[in-house]
Length: 188
Image 1: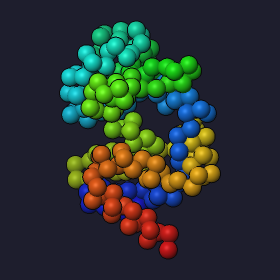
Image 2: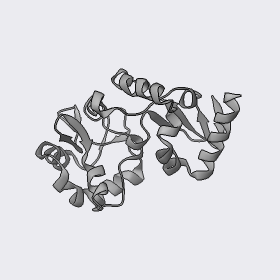
Image 3: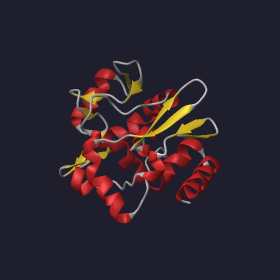
Image 4: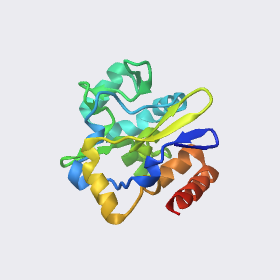
């Protein structure tokens, strides 16, 4: 672990390799698990605002879940998260054949909205836990992502490079530049 500004960062994000392999996992992270995607208070407001524009991209089951529970919910631990369909799929998930995709991201890709998706989804496999004085930045190892780890090793892409855009979105360009310096130092 090392400190960058007000973050405590796991060296795993520098040392482990990762490149999403949707052809292998079929977007399992959007349909497996026991909770929705973590959200910030600001993101809950964004979801409320963009829902009418995202709704046409969603499946009827997702629309039903959102309209029954809201555009976001509080999980069993009290954290804010996306609602689920039958305690499984994220309510915002859509499918291209058998591959799970994000309905929010599809609306973004088509220029309908200017918000890509929750930053927790964009950052995955990195998870950020906010504390009073700092944020913990950790690599989340999940067996459904084994194909992504293998592809990352084959292509020699460390986690932090794979999620560069999301890390910059969350922490800023300066933070990421400092992270790259630490990564270079660790290689020596």
